[in-house]
Length: 438
Ligand code: HAM
Image 1 (cartoon, rainbow, N blue to C red):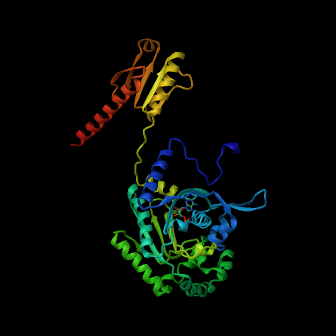
Image 2: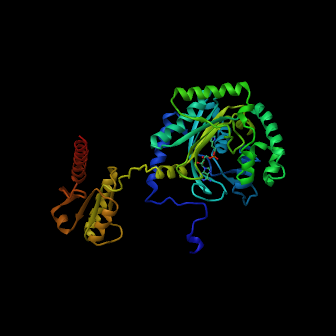
Image 3: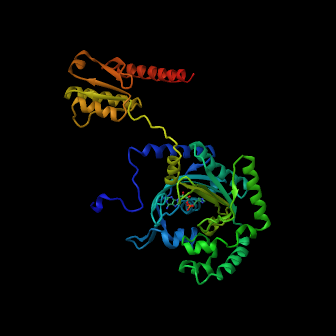
């Protein structure tokens, strides 16, 4: 197949026949975020490369291996966002959002770009839903954030998803832990990959998320961070857990979770499932108390999470969770002849003005293929308009599932009459369904 008709490796199309699934999930996410008091933030697809180098961290896999970075014609280095946190933090600073009153709570739905090995659940362009809170050091903020992610899964009916929790401590705890890790990995210097060798001096914690088999095998027995966190961090972590307990959110503490991005401090968490194979982490997040300062702002304790929409939809599919099909057409008007086509054109216009979904022929088909099309798009009602109907100034609306017929005028009374039929029939089908359940 010619290259121009093939999508780039690691990207996916979301087709008209499937987009309702995405819209359904996105609507649930937006509503849930809004229930928790979050407002939407939209940031650009690309940012200055420095933002991610500084924010995500020079020694992370994302920055070292996975960024889509290019020079513009003006000679600036630009990177397609590999995640949403750094861009949102940049916007928080640039627009002095703290003036709007802390805490600032923002959510986003966006595409991300990472040059990773493409496989099921791992793409080079993917979608994230994320939430971020700025200006909240209290453990209640951590518990609220985790509850928000958990509620999205609950609302969507996702099961068999485990919350794994850890604390990676503050800058101070990190010093001791880094020293312990360094001492441990020094013993395996001859086996580590080149990237991890360079991390040994600069940031040994990043060796823990190396994807190479040998490095990850060595990392399995490395010291874990919980043994090194200070009293303050440990107290903070205990409070997070106690709030989760109070809210009835189940979790397991997994001391091996350190997350692959450099900005994290204290609480980190992941929601993991075994329903979709190797890429089972559907959501990840945590606290990043140092990031805003790292980017040049005042110390601003912050935290957040992001979940991957592709992985989430895979889980829902694997678990047989049905996403309701939306209504796609209330009335299809099939005209016969030029004069009827004009009438139909005007009638669908007024139906649409009444917020109904209406369609008529726009490609000049005969009646039979028009009705076939009306069936295919799932029209609830259809109406054929021919010369005789125009002359009589009335036509017949047919309910597609029951074949019941209703006469309607074709003049100004059309909309009112159609709405009357539509509403009474909807009530009737709700009542029938209810009676059926009794
Ligand atoms: P992350 O763990 O890198 O965290 O990504 C979050 C989620 O995005 C993952 O759990 C996964 O579902 C999805 N994801 C990541 N990479 C891919 C990929 N290549 N293909 C498909 N899905 C993917 C972050 O991005 C942080 N910014 C989360 C955060 C927000 N932390 C604090 N605030």
